[in-house]
Length: 281
Image (tube, rainbow, N blue to C red; front, top):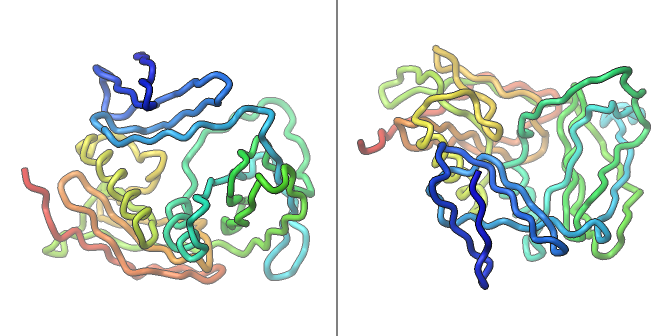
């Protein structure tokens, strides 16, 4: 472990941190804390936003209904529900076209079941919500993830009237090939959007992939890799959100596909991503 203190401008530098990927934790006392995982060593542009102190945090509560039948959907204890902060000056078209597509595939996480599980609840709930403009991401089993909001927790500390219409999930399948049409095994495949935030997200993921040199398991933010035949499958995708496929590989420059907007229950199994340009060695 390594630790430093920020200077008068809030800047810091960590040397001799070792592996290609590290986690960075910040403790600013009464001003808040923060933690960022999967940071590629060598970066000099990392910006960390502090989580605010406990007394300023809010709560969001809502109910989920089947998008087709309108029936109440009960929420199991292991449902994936969290919030994403949204810049105040970001217009709605950029929220849904440039920000949220980069969060369409939830980061993989481990859960531990100890003892009897509680029964499914009639509501979903997010606590410790920062006093900012936020979007709720809700992912229920066998349903497409949905994004709700934005909500401004500076205007009211508690939001209790959220309604989520959860449709059947979408799915995409395809193959990653090189310029000659040969399949590319073990490429990382994900989805992104269009705009500066999406380009930045792709660049950050590509930096990590290059640092790993093609070694290691799927990354938390890129849990899907092609098999030995270059094929991939990504399930449980949101519907109605403009998504763009991206393929990353240590040997090639990133490849981006066309924008897709999927319907409830739709499967696209005819997609091809072509890694055309090899990196300079």
